[in-house]
Length: 487
Image (cartoon, rainbow, N blue to C red):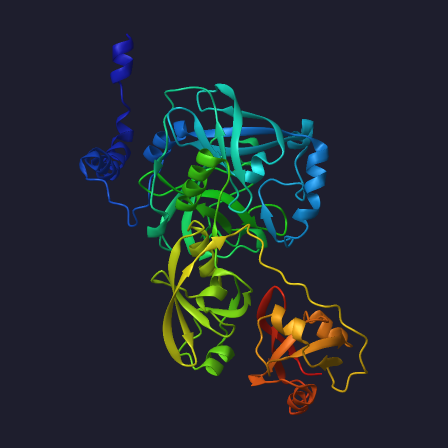
């Protein structure tokens, strides 16, 4: 019977069976005892962003902007002013995949800031758009109106007609520190609601785009690509701390360096766009440069920090407050200025007419001046300078011919008797490339005042070939330094 067959065992195999049973005993014991052991804790505790992403995703939207081809091509020359390695995520200067070129459509991201339908994204996502469609995480699609857009901050505000939306939580970008975790949500290359994470690499970064000097960018190593434009950068509490805007790339793809607009800058811009449709910024009216190690030594500074004032716009807030070329601005409204790029964002956050305190170094001492800011778009006062008359051949290596000041020029530039000589002729390419032009007035050569053509040539004659020459120059627009090597 089957039961007997099953119980039958050849006795000659018993020793082998016994040996196998003994050998297997420790293994069986280990298998039965392992579930009772406590799991080992991980050596390194990595962050889990699952809850953060679930919380933030309903507040993130995809944006599809239909742009007329002729408008895009008209904007292309402006893009060429930006170095090739510096890219926004969407733009006519970038190679676009075929699916994004179709129909003149650009793709971006945005986030909800109010339950009644206000959305923030990048200016360059919707710039020139004829139609903007917003798609939500529940797949609803609504057409949006562009409330306002600001190129200088690269921020735009959209409005959709609906209610009951979930706005994002706004964080404090000023508290960000290098090394902190941050997360981005966007639609790179059309992959909706992609999540990438990394750390803050740096803060208060200067843009290579000269049109965005008023934004102290947040640098991260979060993977950002085309389609992430305008999306939120979140801290570990799920709060928006930045708006993803730009990358460095020589290929058009992410290489580990991305930039976000601080959320306080974005919200200030959005508020003004909602209230008036435009953004008004204060301006100091100075031309600034970095304080190099050599310049710090020359000016007697303990370390190379601050913004070196290389020029002051005539009639500007700085001019009226008494700021001079050669000053070094070390603080603005009590906030330290470490680099020249720190100053414009601080000034630009204030409205025209605001009073501010400027701390500066001059002649080895420190002083504070109170300035009343002008409007950024206000035209600087100009004066009519008589056209230069034909002059004699130059008698110095720079190829400059100078002459005494006439009464009209002295009056128009508010100069006293015995101040400066007027450039009548620029006879060298070196001087022209440095920015010198007929009608400019040279007030000093390397700190030595000049009031006659002979004094000017004598001062130049003391210079050796290769020496750094610094001319203090005034014209109708500004007073500032022109620096060039002595030929």
